[in-house]
Structure formats: C-alpha cells, structure tokens
Amino acid sequence: MNKILTIIMAMAVTGAAYAGSYDRDALTVDKTVEQDLEFQFPNDDSIQPEISDFAVLNYVTMSNEYGERKVVITLQNTSTGNRIFTNDQVMALYANGSRRVAHEERISFKGKETQTLTLSFAASKYPILKVYTRH
View (cartoon, rainbow, N blue to C red):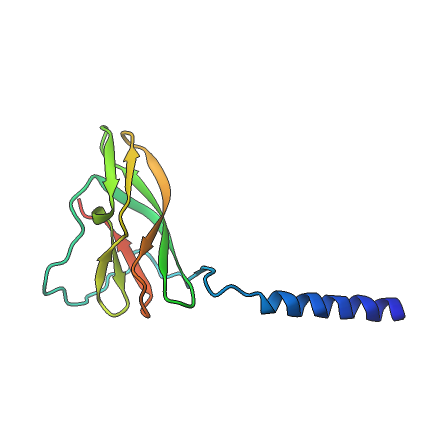
C-alpha cells in the first residue's frame, strides 16, 4: 500500500511541476473551420493577395496566448515552370474582417511541386478564419 501511495505522490509532484512550466509562447492548433466556407466581410479597399500560380491545398491555423498567429499550409505550384513563392501571394482573413499577408518569405518551387510551409502572420486577438491565394 505504501508503494502505491509513493507512486501516486510522485505522479502528483511531476504533474504539478509540468503544469508550472507551461510555456505561454507554445502554439496550439486552433479549432478547425471548414476550409470551403465563404465569408462576406466588406473589403472596401479591395485588399487581395498578389496574383500567383499557387493554390492552397490545405492549412491548419495555430496561435498562442500572446495572439501570435501561424499557419501550416500546403501550397501547390500549378505551373509547369519553376516559381518563387513570396509572402504577398497568400493572405489570411481574420475574424474581424481584416486581411493580412504573411511575414516575409521567399521559397522556390519546381513546376507542379507541392510543399508544406509554416508561415507567420501578424499577432491579433482575432483568430484566422481562412487562408487563400489568387490566380
């Protein structure tokens, strides 16, 4: 019986130590929103991503307690030629209707190549609802 009590106490101490070391910078995956939803926020300034040959195949949004926003995104170069992806070719739509491009990135893609990237977006108290490109 003492052995069981010792094990339980050791587990409790370990759990408490782990809980105390929680990192507020750590990203967690946000609740998934259907990626084919259409939102109708006003866009009076016609803010759009730059036209490109990239298509978004899928993405997962992440955030932390400080409002940092990141997206793991799978992009496909729809062209047969080599292309360079730049940050202004993908845009995030936030829950308040604002739109922002990712922080600066430049990544080479071969013709028809697909790559998964992690992109950083602006910190916000509003979550990212959608990430998209424009052809």
